[in-house]
Structure formats: structure tokens, C-alpha cells
Image 1: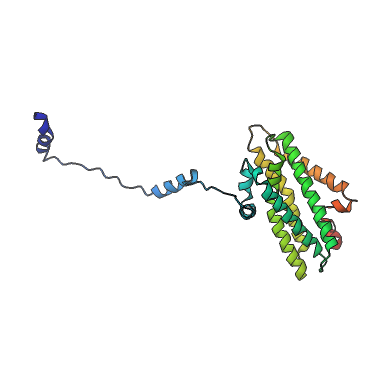
Image 2 (image 1 turned 120 degrees about the vertical axis):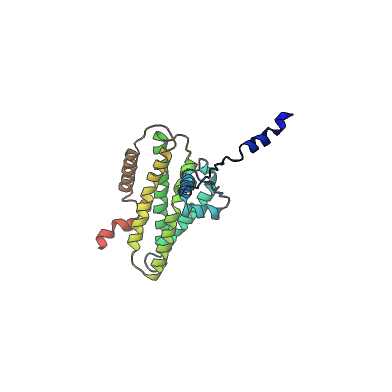
Length: 240
């Protein structure tokens, strides 16, 4: 029974003693620490849902790396095929309006030569990564990943059509920009695929191999009108 009043007796006995209260003063760096923690480990991971062709085109224009980083990006094959058809349509109108007036024959030639080069680009990318980087990637995934980066090229092509109709300059400059973007796509994919495995691969050598294959392709296609890629670039120096 005596234990019931021990806490009261202890209070009476120590009533003259000062009780120190430890206060925790917030540090001035708490906000910075919280911000640092959110940068290192984000609070929320965004879920990118691609359920329609419109959303696919949106992410292909704004964040194509989201599509490429998806291990199962081959499930967007239908969307990529539609995007490729859209790219061919843009190529047709770029060629058809190149002379200041509509010419469907020039449009068809432009669509065929750049479309065939795009297919060759996809095949080269697939076979190089198949032999050296990641054997798990299917041709469907490589197709989707490649075409997702072509959305920006389609946008530049639409700008070219407007420039052709308005007879504005900088047409060749837009063609060169498109060419550089197209040539950088396999290098981007090689780097992304290389991060998925645990072997040491010299991506620089793979890029050189790809460039050699492209040069060989363009040399073989020099005398074939239906396979010449961006003929305007080769004639740029002559026109200047």
C-alpha cells in the first residue's frame, strides 16, 4: 500500500529543487535536410499510364525515355505502328510541297526513301544490340523504342511543310537537324540498353559500328532513287 503514494512523497520531497526542462530548438537546416531527403528519395513516384494513342504520342514528344525505359514497351507496338504511319504521312507532305507547289510524285519518293532508311535503322539497331548488349530485347521493343524518338522528327517535318507552303528559308537547316536527331537515336538506345546488363560493353565502338553500317548503306543506295536518304543534304553544298 505504501508504494501507492511514493510518487507523491517524491514530489513533496523534491518540491524545492528546480526542474530543468530540455527544449528542442529546431535547427535552421531542417528545411534543407527535408529538401535533400526528397531529392535523394522522392516522396511519390509518378505512374505513367499509356492507354491511348494520344497519350503515347504525348509521351513520345515530351518524355520518350519513359517509353524506352519500360521493359515491356513492346506492348505499345500498335501505337508505334500508327506513329510510324503518321511519320510517313508527314514525309509525304514534306516531299510533295518541297517545290512550292504540290507534287505527289516527289512526296511518294521522299516517303519511300526516308521510310526505307528508318526500317534499315531499326534493323541495324536491333542486330547490333542483339549480338552485344541485351539478347532479351525483341524486334518489337526496338521498333517501339526507335519510333518513340521519331515523334520529334515528325514535328520538325510538320514545320517543314509550313515553311514550304509559305516559301520560307531554313528548309535545309531543318533537314540537317532532323538527320542529326535520327542518327543520335541508336546511340541513345545503346546507352539505355547498356545500363540494363552487368557486362562491360564499349558503347563507343558500337556507335562506330553503326555509323559504318549507315555509310555503307548510303553508298550502296547512291544509285537507287528509292533508297536515297535526305538527298537535299548532299546537294546543300552544291547549292551554296
